[in-house]
Structures are given as structure tokens and as C-alpha cells.
Length: 453
Ligand code: NDP
Image (cartoon, rainbow, N blue to C red; front, side, top):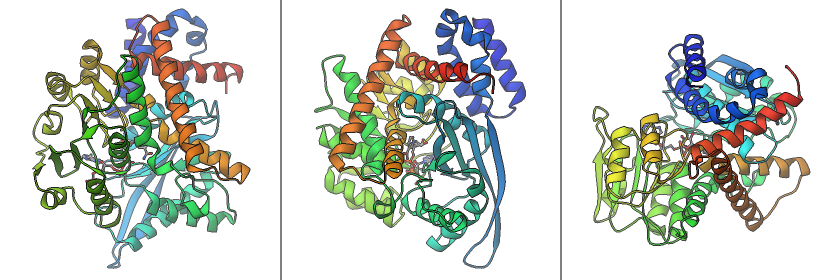
């Protein structure tokens, strides 16, 4: 089997040169799947994994727009339609200067398994652009979103492909994108999720990923007859996922002490409470300022600028029982994992996608801590997007309590299926194997049923 994985990876690297994040994501999944491929030769015979690795369709296009000074800009747009075996393509759009084909393929690949775990009928996709919204006026962001949608609209639809937000794409961007789609298609459909509440959005969608990551951590703790109450938590990021992770941690009696953005991080030994969180939400969502302002505002909090040349991130070097990486991929490397473990961390719930390197993941698994991989722990966002799609199709709206209860149940089910699957395949407590195998099996069965397409 080792040879199967190394041959597979050699092929993936040769066919997808330079796409290191995509290689990393495939490698992690392939290693887990050896357990199931050994038991189920029919999956290997039908080359299911080889087919899942190849996107069904990749769309790449130009998005040209004009800034407020009249200068012209050319960005690149992408949509990766990875797998539609169990439903329409579903996954977010990311606007960040680092976006490239390899990053979006890794995200789309992860999304296939994650969406399968939610039990909702959603295939996997991802998209975005190397456009950087930082420092851009609302009018510039609108013009870019319109240029982007002028091409994307012909490839998506409520039964084909339903994008949502991700890094750099929040409520403002979804509004501009949806507005242009509606104008071009002349129809009001649930083609995007994360919409505003007055025009088809679901309550709890903004909160869902962060809430879900905390629910997942709590479920993992329950297996050891513990909960989050009184535990200290390190949280990275200061965007959508980080904000609602902090909110739910506070609700469940934990003490979040850090937040970060691309400039550095704040450490607040007293804990981030609701008032301080409100300040962060206004800072990030309305004023679009830097996290350092937190330390200017609140006594006792310290801002540390993070030097990108450092080979570790000091955020992960504080005493805490829990870590919720909620910024971006590969933000916890091997050194960070060592620091976390040394400082007593034994719960890691990944709000971000693939925030831990393979070295870091292996350290967590070897140390037998409670490690919830992103494709399980952060599935609450896409699950609630699925609930938004259901409400749009039925033209009804559920209440906050109803959606939150459904989200909680979905996260509990995802936890339980990962836990049980890990046990079934002889690796108890290994949620990485559990998530990869459970997600894969569902998609694989659908692909077998549907023939070679
Ligand atoms: P946001 O854009 O709302 O926030 C991202 C945060 O992370 C910002 O504080 C940003 O800092 C920081 N960040 C982003 N890129 C980098 C980087 N390269 N280095 C350092 N800091 C960085 O995004 P989300 O909160 O929506 O997404 C965060 C993570 O969660 C991503 O991995 C995303 O894929 C994942 N995720 C999101 C879901 C959702 O529903 N939104 C669903 C599932 C997963 P700055 O402001 O300086 O850019």
C-alpha cells in the first residue's frame, strides 16, 4: 500500500507541478484511505481516488476592472468544479493575493469530503481570485465583483454550482456578486449562500463555521468526559470564523486569549469577553482596521508583530488547553505543534482549511490529543449553506433556534461518524482517518452507482 500511495503521489506531482498545497491535501487523504482501499478492492479497481483527484472541470478567466483613480487592473478568476457525485458543486470563493490554481484545487478537494460528511446533498467546488480587497473602497470592490461575476455567471446556478464566501469574501462581496448574477440571469434564485437576511440568507450562516468548530471540540472533549468550561483557548485569525469561534467559546465558559491578522497577533491574558469581541467585529467588519488596535484599546493586551521570516508563530507558544486555528492554510508548522504540545494543548479544532502541516498533524496524532481536522471541524459553515439552499428551494425561513439546533446535530453527527469510522478501521481517536474514510466512502459509493462518467 505504501507503494500505491507513493506511485499515486508521483503521478499527482507530475501532472500538477508546483501545486504544493494540492499535493499535501491529496497525500494526507491517500494515506488514510489505504485502510479502506485494502478492505474494498472494488474502489481501487474503479480508480475512484484517481478520479476524485482530477477536477470534473476547471474554469479560469480574466476579471478586468477600473479603480477609483481610473487605473485599470487585470485579475485572474477561477472556479474548480471538483466533484458532483452527491449534489451540485458547493464551496466558497476566496479573494486573496495568494490565490492560485493549486490552493483552490486543494480547497476544492477537501470540500468534496467535507460536504459528504455533512450528510446534505452537496458536491465539492471552490473558486476565487488573486484580487486583494485590502485597502480598496466599497466602489472598487463592487466593480471587481461585477467583473468577476460577468464571467462566472455562465458556469453556476442553483442546481449546478452554488458558491459561498471564504477569505476576503464576506457579506459585502456576496451582495455585489449576487446582485450582478441576478441582473445577468434575470432570475432570483438561491445561487449563492451567505446572502443577506432580507434577500434569501439564512440566520446563523455567518456564525456557523466558528460555532461548528467549537461544537466539534466540545464533542471531542465529551469522549473524555470533559467540556470547554474554564479552558484557555488560542484562536488565530480575526475574520468570520475566528469571531464566531470566540463568541461560542465565551458562551460555553472558555477563555479565548488570542486573535490575529496578517500583521501579527494580540494576546489578552484576561480573556476576550463579549464587549471586546464587539470591538473586534466593528474593527474588522465595518472599519476594516488592523488587530493591533485591540492592544491600543484594552489595557493588559499585547500586540506582537509576526516576522514572516521566523520559523514559528509565537501565537502558538502560550499556555492553553485548546487551539482553534481560524486564519489560513499551514499556519501551524512542526515547531508550532511542538510548542503547543509543550504548553499543555490537547484539543485542536481546525476552523481554517488545512491550517496544520503534515508534520504538525503527525505530532498531534502521535501525542494522541483530540485533533479535529478541518474537513470535519469546520463543516458547519457549508452545512448551514446547505440549510440555506433548502430554505431557498422551499421559499421558507427557519428560526435561529431551528437552524442552530440543526447545525449542532450535524456537527454531533459528523463527530460521531468520524469517531466510529476511526474505530472501525483500527485507529481509535484518529479523527483524520475517520473524516477521510467516512467522506470518501459516501462519494465513492455514489460514483460507483453512477458509472464511469
Ligand atoms: P476572513 O477573510 O473573514 O478572515 C481571515 C482572517 O485570517 C483574517 O484575519 C486575515 O487577516 C487572516 N489571514 C488570511 N490569510 C492570511 C495569511 N496568509 N496570513 C496571515 N493571516 C491571514 O476569512 P474566514 O474567516 O472566512 O476564513 C478563515 C479560514 O476558515 C480559511 O482557511 C477558510 O478557508 C476557512 N473556512 C471558512 C469558512 C467560512 O464559512 N467562512 C468555512 C470553512 C472554512 P487579514 O485581515 O490581515 O487579511
